[in-house]
Length: 255
Image (tube, rainbow, N blue to C red; front, side, top):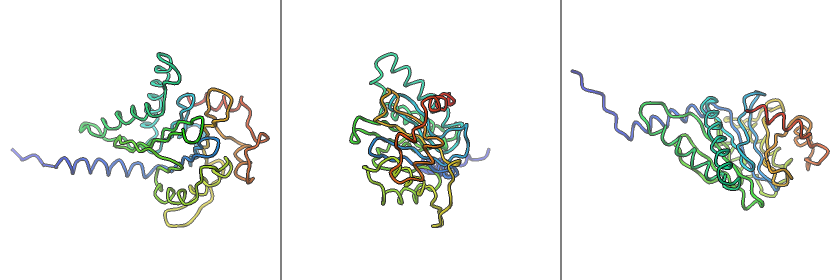
């Protein structure tokens, strides 16, 4: 009888973490920034149908990078949790912190289990508050830990370089156009120090807008508004506002 090959628990966990990090690094990066009137999400995503950024509930949005089928199942689970909790108790009882705790338990359980591989995903959960000080952004790596972020955060393949670029230039009082242009400039940074061109078709952009009169603060930034914000310093005026029907159609296509 042969002797089973022994691997220490520490080495096994290190191997699983390395496996998950390599999978996440293959995903395109995305960034989340606070700006004066809310939180903006910008992802490099050429697909018009497979979203990396989605609404979860009234004031809460979800963004992820890594394996699509894995983070899509987490998004659906989070939406069901939010709907059930809001229906059972009160809409105000649905919070980003509660959702982050749920995702942390799920990711942590999968990461610790030996019978299945760890999820190759990194998540961001954000909630816009009545004031910038009340905004909440949580980053959840593959192992289920929770990191409370402020200002700006990047995840995905080139996140270290992008995060460093953002942290040196981001301000909380930026307007939407300024924050969006900074986000796109950061995503255009290459690991070798170069810079590439990103067209509007390669970007997925959404915001949690605290000044939006509707209960739902999430909306996608599409077409003419995106072009105006990227092209015009101080953009984001009502002239570039997309129609609500276009917004709702885009949001409805996620389900």
